[in-house]
Image 1 (cartoon, one colour):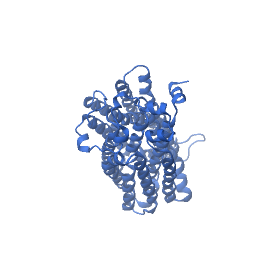
Image 2 (image 1 turned 90 degrees about the vertical axis):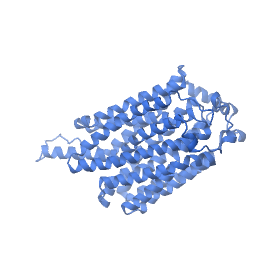
Image 3 (image 1 turned 180 degrees about the vertical axis):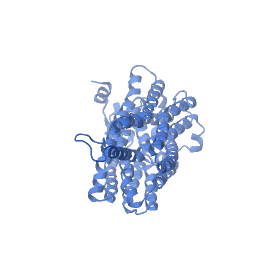
Image 4 (image 1 turned 90 degrees about the horizontal axis):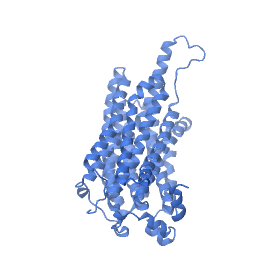
Amino acid sequence: MNTLNAINEKIGHYRWRICALVFFATTINYLDRNVLGLLKMTLTEELQWTETDFAHIVMVFQLAYAVGLLGIGGVIDKIGTKAGYAASLLGWSFAAMGHALARTTFGFGVARAALGVTEAGNFPAANKAVAEWFPKKERALATGIYNSGCNIGAIVAPLTVPFIAEQWGWQWAFILTGAIGLIWIVFWYTSYSSPEKKLEKGSLSKAEYDYIHSDKDEAYEDAPQTEKEHVSWFKLFKYRQTWSFFFGKFLTDPIWWFFIFWLPAFLDGENARKLEAFEALYPNGAPEGIEPGVISWPLAVAVVYTVSTIGSIFGGWLPEHFINRGMNANKARKLSMFIYALLPITVLFAQTLGQIHTWYAVAVISIGCAAHQAWSANIYTTVSDMFPKKAVASVSGIGGMAGAVGGMLIAWGTGILLDHFKALGEIETGYGIIFVVCALAYIVAWCLMHLLVPRFKQITDL
């Protein structure tokens, strides 16, 4: 029996039920977020979008997401995790369904803005829930599990959205995926409360409650009193720990955004280029048994995010494994993140390998995306490593805003870059430039975070 199972058997496992709820919320979040990217080709044809038009719509989402994060973390810290999470998910469910009403580029921009503002609450609320319900040694694993919902949502989307759009129209793809969140809210409101309230009601054992609050450096916090405290952003920005998280998210979140919105188009373009080359090679028809090497891009997208799910969970497991073997928490987190920062370098070979076969490109992109999710599981956990629970959602919001701004910049740059090289008939050169950015962003972020915060140590004077 492994350590985690032994602990759960002895003290209980209600905290993992909370983790499951946060996992499903994050799955819904990314399911709703991914629909637009999967319908890009359909909507581009129907609405005559250019790459820059699509980039502008993506940027509107990112801007709204950043604006939402300006205040949502503080609101969640003030009103509590339960109400804050539910309000956010209710809002983004209706915003997702609202895409079905859009008929113009401007209309989609409005819908994306509404989705961005409301989806901003997911990660601040999720991080706060994990900080409330898990001791430090389990937070990376819990974060890795709930963060894998990003990938599950991204897996479910390509396997369902194109089918729904083909059978009933693209409008129903937005309506049906958006409606799922309304079901989650029912389970959330019937299951979630603070550990203190669950202990009072008898739903949580005293042993599990004590285990959740077993971190000595957090013992000074009086959770019932601090639940509704709010620490101002101005005060938080005085700490280098805040800037460490800020720049870590600013540099790495855009890479994930790029793959979410442009991976389907990249793979579809790879198919088109292979078909064109095949037809040029065999103008009168190919000999029997010779095929152009075209792949199913929805299946390929699902494969990328399936591998990313493994990366997310492994990313949370590895630092706990290091800690259980005697390594201190700071070194375990830093070493794990350094390993994850190196793996995206494989993306540099995506196009070269893709010329041999597109599935080879899918393989290295899968490694890069899995590394991102492993990195993400740990960078979120650094917030609860460094800040008291009363500031976790606020700091998460600051970092999320930084990531959204970075996402806007990469969307803007990608649109301009791809339109430029598409006009030259060399769009693959544009993708190659972006892949260099994707490959190097994490190691730059790790170095900067290490310079700002050599040790992830809890702040006690906030």
